[in-house]
Image (cartoon, rainbow, N blue to C red; front, top):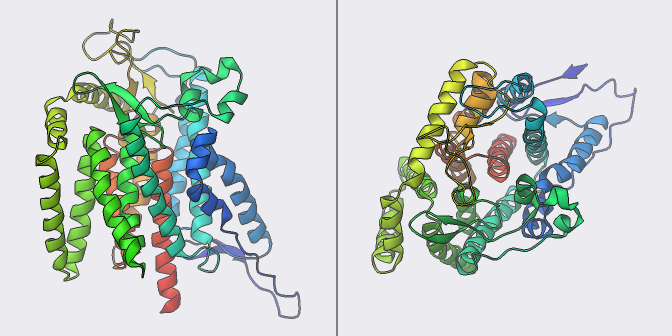
Length: 462
């Protein structure tokens, strides 16, 4: 007999009579796949593995989960997993529309689009395994506090990468993995984005080419997205530590992080931080902890002082006065919605490249103007990619899963509960302008796993 349930429920075998068979020996899940994934991420990035480490380590995670299941141990599914299964099904089904050429897009054969589709599918499956593995770990195998520290450590790495991008914006090198690839493969732009480490993206946003922090996450937008998703975990790690030095370090790290956050010229990051801080403050006020408002006021005053007394304020003003990407984003949102209207249920299976630019179909990329046209529909935000590539079914499944998590864990008043919910809520605002694969989505599912485990441990203690 097989039992399937979720939210602390399990997939497992029912026990037979006591004399029929000996009790199954406990099969522990080792912490190393998750711990090494997070703790050693700077190493993976330097080696040229980067996001490729997720499917690589998902393989042993899957084997270990199957072994535990075969030994008779229960395999828990997260609350609302049906929504995520619906999303994965939509990703697969939408491949049937891969050969379609929507109006205004470059005509290509379905096989030309297959590489990007396989990449996304593999990443989605790998992160599903990560969600299940992290959620099935026990406190004895990987304590929640240790997982929080690992995520907080990655925020420190994000800040360090931001500083590197500021002072050495053109720093890059050929990774070992890149050296091993044939010339015809390693020089492709998509492959370069996966295996070639660099500190910053050099872009003309406010006049003149300037470095925008990207290390170790590959893109400036991904760097900004991860900044918002990881910041709360550093605070929780310091908050729950008994060491004063840990709290002092966290405060200093947060203060220093303002500099690369501003220099990144990343308006989505600025909005995300605002959403994060406002949500956390509201949760604490509702708990009767009014002191959070005093702390927030002091932090805001310090930020305003830093902006007005340093060149950072001029950087913010310059970025707000130069909205070069606004027109492109509006153009791509319109194309995504038009495409969704033409294929509303399953979408087109992947993104598409527009013919020309937003002003003329004759405008395209060139050596002198790399951003003049041939834009990617669905490349300007996870929401628009979901709508365009996977239709209403995929969009409902993806959003439904994380929205259900926010609702299910809304009563969790612990530091982990508030930080995890804040990360998920921030991701909802970020999906308007950021794509989630691969590291942002990884941190979203780990936040979900922490919320889920927090609930299970609370129920066990009760």
